[in-house]
Image (cartoon, rainbow, N blue to C red; front, side, top):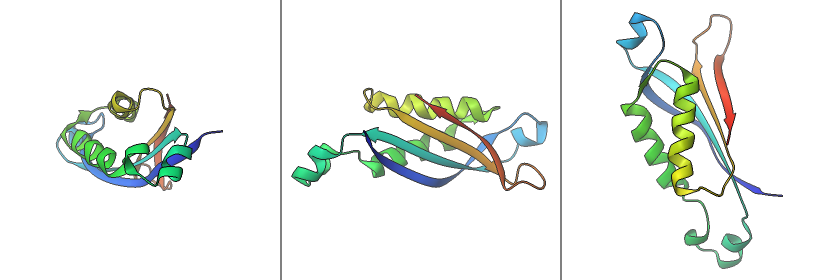
Amino acid sequence: MDDVMYIKDLRVQTIIGLYDWERKVRQEVSIDIDIFFDNKAASAKDSVNDTIDYKKITKAVISHVEKSSFKLQESLAESIAVLIKRDHPNNSIRIRVSKPGALRNAKDVGIIIER
């Protein structure tokens, strides 16, 4: 069974959406990232070199998302997965992207992908 390094509710401002007004304003998206890995080496050696560097991943994701301008949350989620898989090709990942407040009467709406 794999262990999980996670980042929960990372809030980033970006251009996202289909409507004309959405293409002109930055909106907040919420991102959850789960990276599945074997924690045994990191915990035994107590070394960041043997684990997932969540600060590095967070900085890369924020930079990527802030520069993006996707129409679909699905496309944004996939691009985040590709970004993370470049440095962690052997790890399974789960990405959740949502737009808080996008639907009236709903807390948020989004997509979850696993790669």
